[in-house]
Image 1 (cartoon, one colour):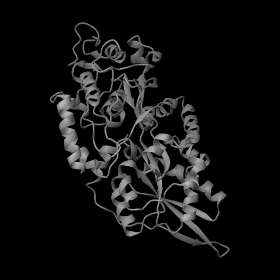
Image 2 (cartoon, one colour; image 1 turned 90 degrees about the vertical axis):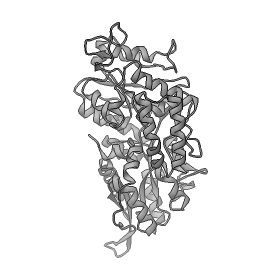
Image 3 (cartoon, helix red, strand yellow; image 1 turned 180 degrees about the vertical axis):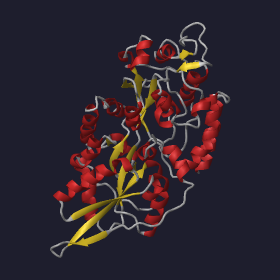
Image 4 (spheres, rainbow, N blue to C red; image 1 turned 90 degrees about the horizontal axis):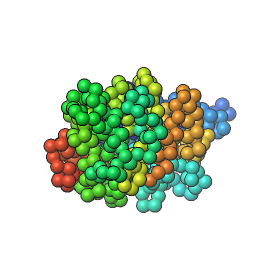
Length: 450
């Protein structure tokens, strides 16, 4: 299942690239007012969303808000992800944007530079400590915050197939505290586990004599060219960066090369993960193989929780992601709602934003199970929804509190992605040396983004 919610956050690089080719739709109405029965004027605040899964949760939240604030009505507008940012740019430029709109980090900077967003300043100070720190950091520019955190992927964790673990003589407890090391060696406790969990067509495991990885029956792990689920985290846990604070791409470093080499070796040398020919152009391959019982450990985010819950026909659980030399470092991608600086209803807009950033306002998102709120105190509602289904998602929140590597940023990120992708494909296929390929891809990305 490929949901709008998933495309809105998890596939934020691929979706950015595809959305750029789409044309703009017509303008939408923004600020409105309605007469009340008493003859006064009631304010209507409009909120633009791309996420169909959480729209109902927002509608329920705003119904409660209206009970507490009968002079303000909040209406939601759904714009599909494919058209969302093209249409938003057109509407903001034409003065027809909604009072509040969802915002993805890859698109933020132009709106900040042009003065289109409300600063989330002192009026929100009492709430900020309750917002996921990585989300606040992601949407802060020049010391100012430009939106109220709403949805977060938390951190990255590992879904596991209990039967495949048991068949290999491995317990779920052994997945806690796993470490990887560049080049392998005695410090690497991840690779031995992955070998045990990998089986060829003749039933030989990856750590047994005669193992033939070119004829796989099942893989131990989901190593692939997966930005959010895999390689960003490995780069961070080896002390590297993908972009520096200015947005320049810096993934050609020795630290990044060590991380990529480890992943490429898992795929091409040890054969404990699917071939890149299967995964380079199919971001769902490892997830689908996990759901079919052919991958034992699937590293991903909370964005795949519902997919796993709905699709897995076996017992499964969630374990921490493996740590590198610098510990476990996750990428946390979050979504905010931004206020329109040109709204004609600024006071009401701020009041709605404050509601959306509160426990009472955000708990509706959590209790629907559709997304993890970026308001920390509302995450218990998300946990309770999933625990009612005998699923404990707390591992994602726990991972999200660990050190993180910044999520992608920059108005020309999609152009940079298209520039580095062909070389990354060759690196993961094992046809281009890692260090040389990364330097080439980095230069192409920075040229495309300039």
